[in-house]
Length: 477
Image (tube, rainbow, N blue to C red; front, top):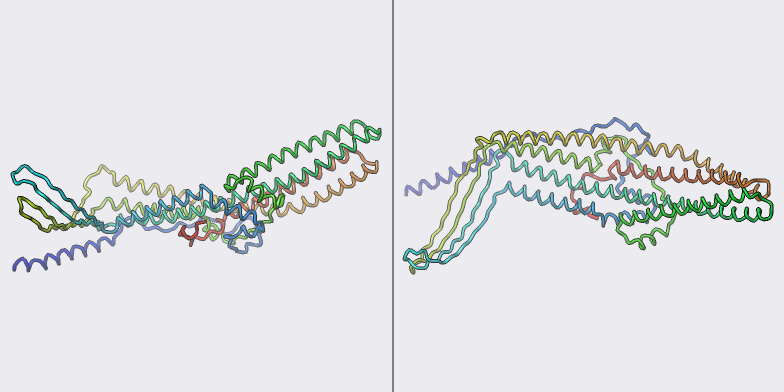
């Protein structure tokens, strides 16, 4: 009877201890995280395309009206090692998150064993079978385990942002290679026409020289000009081949298949839609995956400060076990249940400053990451400003270069007509051709600069990435 009266009192004491422990576990030491502000100017210093009307760039490539480019980007997304690495890092972060979350919850394990043997004590053979279950739970009085879990959560978000960054960077790289290839093809087309024209001029001049209507020096000049054009054409063809090789490496498409795909629109330069960005820099920069990843890393490091700070304080764990055993000795069976329950308290007494140094180390890592975050923000502003400046410069230079090209082409036609009428000279025609060719190259170079600036702006503003996209499983290509 007395033991029965003590049993409720003991149960009440245990229940009270657990309740107090749960209340204490609501405490957490260490700093609370707050995202740092993005340091950016109040407005862009470079002109905004279309006066800065906001527009989502997530499907920006479809606005280029080039199905080949869209297919190449899609192929690259599916086969890129960098994207595959980013996905693998997400899987690693998700596994780490699960491990960290498990430390907060109780752990239960079971064991079973059976054996038969002779102990040499004269009792003969002994058979034993034991089964038991064990449970353990660290009450996390100062939030160390929860802070570790929070750090894992933040790093999963950072790895998702890295995945988006890899996709944006890859799309920009493929687009740049594609633009360079199409510009190279356009240059090669112009060089082909120029080489054919100079070869024909050389042939006609040679005939006139044989008939005595042209000086031998003019024939030599025309022949040298034709040879120069042929060499320039060969060099440009090699440049085009190198561009194809670059796309093969980026898209993993077989070269014959890629060449067949490109042949349908050879020398056709894509017409990029003018990119639009928001007029408030912070709202644009917040869409950069690299900046979002850096911010999530800051959150993880803040949580880690709390985790190492909690390691400086006592730890309380609850452990328990229950089991049942059966033994057969000298023909008799012996069986019974076993159980045990109790708290375990760990007190850090002396560690030669290790735990204090761990806190200082975690704080220093946070400060380093914060400086890196601010550097990323500054670089983001610079990249947007540079891209906008290049776009604006290209817009102002284009009319002047096109006017120059038109004037040189008119002069070339007049020089050809005078030479055909016998009033002009081969030297005059060659000067006109060089001027036209230089103007054509300048126009195409400007178009390359404009398109590459548009691609750079797409990349600088994060490619229309949305921070709400946090689950890579929903967005995998």
